[in-house]
Length: 287
Image (cartoon, rainbow, N blue to C red; front, side, top):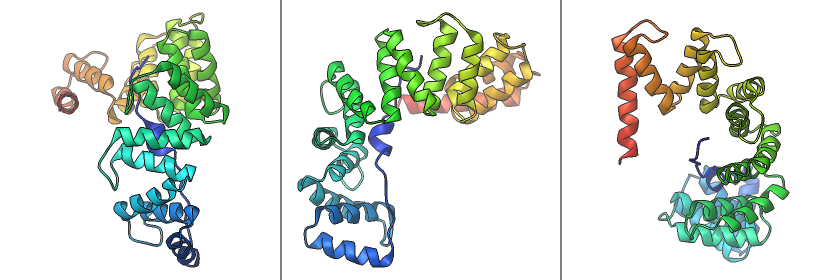
């Protein structure tokens, strides 16, 4: 199971709206007069360059005005600006503060983001109890990524029954990450009877969405002939798809396959190409 998680909820869940010129003028006037909703909308317009030139500093200014008036969406968005360092210096403590304000008002996306921050110890001391609490609140409001993240937390806590429950909910909603995780649980017999057919089913669903981990995992099953007839060509196709997306393990595997002629014709040039990509990733990790 992949233990690293990017903060997708913190960065990308806050949705945007686009406006006409007439609406833009109205929003600007209302924002200047102190209307909190208009201030939030004006800030979003500067984020996207919708009717105005993109300007992260102006976006930060107007979203802050709205957030200070108690607008939950603005508070959540302000948390994301601090988290990403857009329009303001990156500040995890401020990000946590504003996510918390929005979450306490019931804003589902901020609740999920707050849960991740507690889980990862970003801007606050790690607290699994609080992480579960806020992710459950977000999940209760239908946030699919919260379903998946609950599966991730329960899996790491070796509570495989609950992990399966939440991964399955997320997978049925189309989460490729959760679909891949279900495949892993079936393949590695984590709280379930080992079932290669079910593993392949879920890996294929994630592969259909272009999920690199699943491409690598399904490639491995074709490579080994587990649950499917052994097929070196299909394995290579899937490894290449994963590697082209930057999957480190797939890149390293391809380097060795081409270097030694393992299931592919020996090719020093291809080996060197994938070796360079591996080295580049290692350099980034050590920066």
